[in-house]
Structure formats: C-alpha cells, structure tokens
Amino acid sequence: MASSKEGLVRNGIPIEKETAFNAFYTEVKEIEKRDSVLTPKQQIERLLRPGSTYFNLNPFEVLQIDPDLPVEEAKKKYRRLSILVHPDKNQDDPERAQTAFEIVNKAWKTLENEDTRKKCMDVIEEARGRTDLMIEEKRKRQKKEGKGAEVEEDDPMKYKHAVYVMTMKLFADMERKRRELEIRDTEERKRKREAEIEEEEAAKINKEWQKNFEESRQNRVDSWKAFQAGGGAAKSKVKKVKGFKPPKHKAETR
Image (cartoon, rainbow, N blue to C red; front, side, top):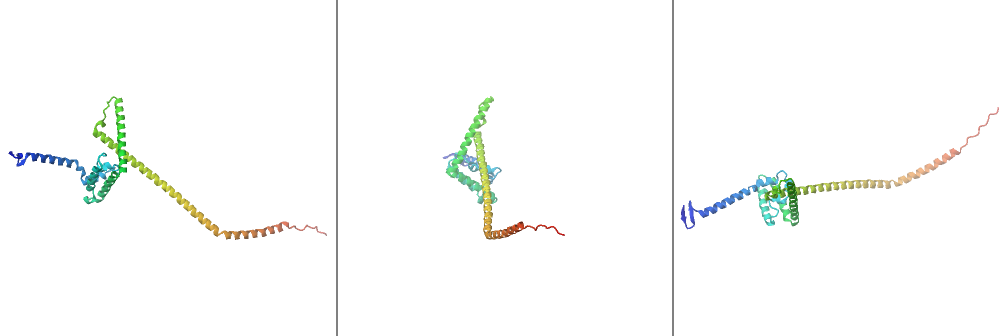
C-alpha cells in the first residue's frame, strides 16, 4: 500500500476509486437479483402461467407495477416488458411470446386510457376499503376473544398482500359477471332469432297458402256452380219420386 496525490493505493488502484467501484458492482448485482424475474423466458412463463386468465385481468399485475405509480413510469415499465417478450426477441418460442406480447400491450392500453385506468383504480380503492373493513372485523373478533388488537395485516407488507388478494378477487368477480351477462345476452339473441325464423316460416307458409288460394279461386267457383246445378236437378228428381202415387189395388172379379 502506498500514498499518492489521489490518496491511499491498493494494488496500483486508488482505494477511493476501488470503494466506489465495489459499491457500483454491489448495486448492479442487487439490480440483477431484483430484476432476475424480468428475463424473457420467465416473463413469458409468468404471463401464461395457470390461472393467468384471471391474473392478467389486472393491468397492474401484468406490468408488475404499483397502482399509484405515475403513468409515465408505468409507460417505461411497459416498454421494457414489451421488448423482453417481443416475438423477435424470443424466436425459439414465437407463438407464446406473441401471446405474452399481446397481453402486455392490452394492459398498457387499459392504463393509458384515462377512463379505463380510472375504472381500474376504482377497483383498487374498493379492494383497499374491503380489506380495511376485514381487518377491523378481525381486530374486533380478536379483542372479543382476548387475543389482543394486533393483527398480522398491521405489517405493511402483509397489508399490501391482503389488498392484492382482494384486488384479484374483485377483478375475477367482474370478469365472471361480464361472462354471465355475455352468455345471457347470447342466449337472448338466439331466442329472438329463433322466434324471428319461426315468424318468417309462418309468414312464408301463409303467403304460399294465400297464393294457392287465389290461384284456385276460379276453379272453386266453377266447382260450386256445377255443384249447385247438379244439386238442383237432384232436388227436382227427389220431388218427382216423392210425389209419385202407386195405383189403387182393385179386387179381382170372377
């Protein structure tokens, strides 16, 4: 170790610079550790994991951001994530990468739009409100049982997790209701269409009947006239037969 104008030196490197480099290296390693889940393959797996249909309803979950994160910061996260899962960057698994890419894009479009973002924030606020009520009920129950007023959700991390769970439940409930309404709407449209088809068939049959009825009108008139004419002759013959009197029987004379 020796002295120099820059201070103490170790192995030819000023200790001040070595310390700065070590701090930088440690920070980089921490970032790598923190962001290890952001590898392309891991992100694709995360976005397509079992249950992802419901997990991905929450755009904050898709982009892995806090709901209170400013829009501009959310945009940066979106750009980074979209690059990671882009099909061009995952040519060994392009189909799954494309699906993941579309999920990320949909999440960002939801948050980018002011109206849809507000709806998502309303869900978050409702989740927080319900979680707070749940915690208070739990606290009262514990007090009544003599277990004290402290609950595990008093820990900020556990409280955040409880809100997260409630948020996912609310998004899932919304989706189930949407699907139920969609099914009912589809069934209603199907019933209406079937009724329309029945009406169309009935109208078609009636039209054909009317057409045949009109086309056969003259034949019916002629047949009726012939029938009437034939019926008159028959009546006349009946009268003659009816008015016929047989001659009186005369006794024989011998």
